[in-house]
Length: 301
Image (cartoon, rainbow, N blue to C red; front, top):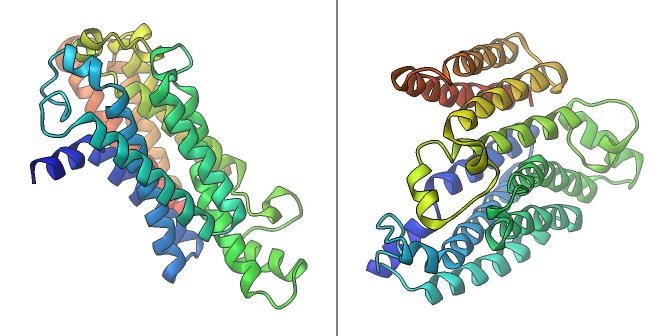
């Protein structure tokens, strides 16, 4: 039981649950249903589990040297080898499930997971640490839309125009272009990429001592926690604006939620560099902004 608890902690459960829930909700909103929605959720869950376990397996020596009691391997709850094997099993299972959603969906999700592993295996401690977040979060919506495209292709009686029409109708899209090949609107991909990069900077806030102890020097660590909070708020506000201007279904409710998210993020920007008490308020405002932008995104998707 101790090893199981260690594995559950080592997978970074909150980010794993959030990303899985987010992509699954997006898949449901755009019309992916039934067994394919379950496969999408399972694929994303397995991918996130593999990334989380890979991260803790790679960091085990540093975490142990720094006596990080919050890390299950360093705390002795689970062995490094067990975590590494779990990561390998999860990534193999992830690829199998991902390609069951269609070749394109499988390829896109492979790139997403590869970006996460690249972060774990080296990019985390470099100035390019934000690149995997941009790539992974920017492409996550495409996993769902490519799965929907594949489902439409299987269900259409005539390959070609019928598939394109079925897919476009389900997403309320019109006109020729890359959207006919199963890709989400560029505004959706740009918005989620900005949110992903914001998450990267937000992870630094409050982790200054732990990062210093383990010697991690990614881009947010080089910028510092105060500036990272400012950057996080700016990125969330930018995501809200991009989605408000370019998301497919900009209903009044969706726009109102996105505007509220942008306003909350703007408050975070204004307060981020002030005294500690206001800095905490800035962080709360930024977190609220993330929640509002995610809800607005799903309403506008």
